[in-house]
Amino acid sequence: MSLQDITNDQLHALSFASAGEQARALAEGRVSAVALLEHLLARIDRFDGAINAVPVRDDERARAAAREADAALARGERRPLLGVPVTVKESFDVAGLVTSSGNPAFADNVAREDSLAVAALREAGAVIVGKSNVPLGLADLQSYNAVYGISNNPWDPARTPGGSSGGSAAALAAGYVALEIGTDIGGSIRIPAHFNGVYGHKPTAGLVALRGTGVPSGRHAERDLVVAGPLARTASDLELALGLLINRDPLLAKGWKANLPPARHARLSDFRVLVIDQWPGSERSVHERQVSERVVDRLRTQGVQVSRPADLPPGLLPDLVRSHRVYRSLLGSSLATPPALSEAAQQRFEALSPEDDSADAAWLRASTLRHSQWLQDHEARVALRHQWERFFAQFDVVVTPVAPLPAFRHNHDEPKDARTYPVAFEDGTREVRFLDLFAWAGLPVLPGLPATSFPIGLDDEGLPVSAQAVGAYLEDRTTIAFARLLEEAYGGFIAPPGYEDSVAAPATPATPAAPTAPAA
Image 1 (cartoon, one colour):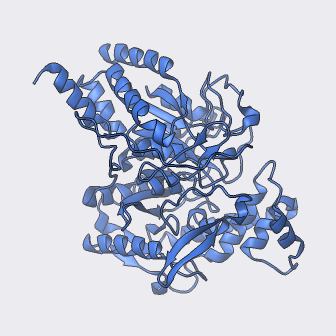
Image 2 (tube, one colour):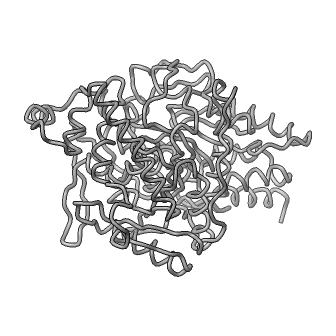
Image 3 (cartoon, one colour):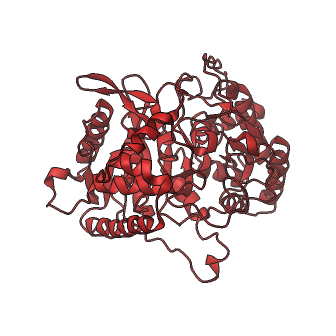
């Protein structure tokens, strides 16, 4: 075998390697940063016409950065991501590139400097390849907009990769890069990770600085409930990236530093786990049942102590329904410029009874929430965080589904709040409202808890299935470790058919007849 053949084999082997594995290959001289970058750029050229995960490319500056990384490696420098190609969610500022959040009004908004998160990746030696696609205003479970078009799922291009970090998760699943960063307020890291079969971590609230994200540029105040965090193909890369992303705010760094506690356990069998698969007051979907059965079987096989809500003493588990009402209230009121209610939603708002304390009512009232009511909701949020702290004195993680369904087919009907999606139940398939898909995703958001989405195989249709592990406040390392231990025992990420790399290149997946992105 010639040297060129060996180099090609090594490059193909790195297409779906972890960021940590790529960094080790670079440090050991088994591959150059330039060769790795060119290999992955070629994959994007080859596959991205079908999925449109990375519509913003920065090839020439990436090539310059790869050359600099090779020179640094030759000098003996070692950094966690030195020479490793990465992409970032479009809403993160990258100096010299547009940040639009998919909004045509900001299509010429060129960032002057890197966001704090992107600067952290560069400092670690990462090569920024480009930016991944998002929905308009980062406000959808699908990733399409009038600036960049529609992103498709590598597992089935007729389906969405999710949102709002949909391009991020699709880029990982397609083998473009090994690491991404996204944001999450309603599952925007974890749901795309689930839909594409990769890993995603929603950090504890406030842990990762958001400066330099979103539009308009130049904001100092961080939006309520939003967090930034990593997506990857392995749990170990989540741990690696989290360590790089924390403690970046220059003002806080003057006097404060987050020293996260280590993972509670090093063995899976030592974990105390509560599994929830049915949202209170709702019917359990087939997908939710499949998630819990698979997780419980694996955990009990490993000797893990698994409990169900019926096993708990009264009052230990916080009231999920009440919490969801507060979440919907603060979520809706967190928007600086809330979208106008659809005609049907406006009619429901006008017909609300003053005594209606449901989650739907909270959502409808959110855009006109008085500050006094916001303060009451905020107090409920902080009290809830303390309730969860008491709960986590007896349990280590809570495992739930990420969503009640796998990746769904593109649906760009307007208005968005009137969309429904087919969800399978034991007695048949029924349409479920858009607003009813966020219960599991919202569970850790209101109290600001860490949550790690991790893949657990495929369903009967060959689509990725994931669960999420929720942990105690600031115990991010515990949920990531839990996902890593399950990965070590049962495997994790699976490459989508047709995207696996080999010396003999597989055929490019067919481009589906996808709907056209509506004008903004």
